[in-house]
Amino acid sequence: MWHEYLAWIGSIMLLVHAGVHFNAWLPWLAILMLLITVGSGLVGKFLLKRANESLKERKLQNGQYLV
Image (cartoon, rainbow, N blue to C red):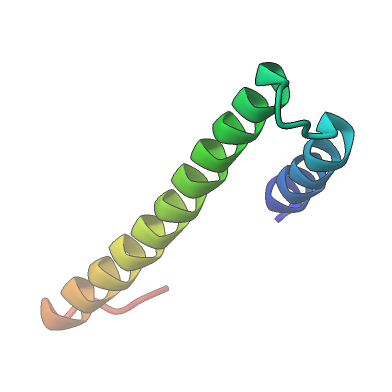
């Protein structure tokens, strides 16, 4: 959970610090990389949740009890 909180805080800090100007390339590139990183983190979190649910279902179908 700390990893997620720190990632969101870092993202907000980047947005505030970047001070996006229309003719500045570096802040726009930083925000693009931020969006890619946040998006991949959310996709990874979703896939991990689905994998855990699938594993639990598979164990229940095989007659194994969850501990």
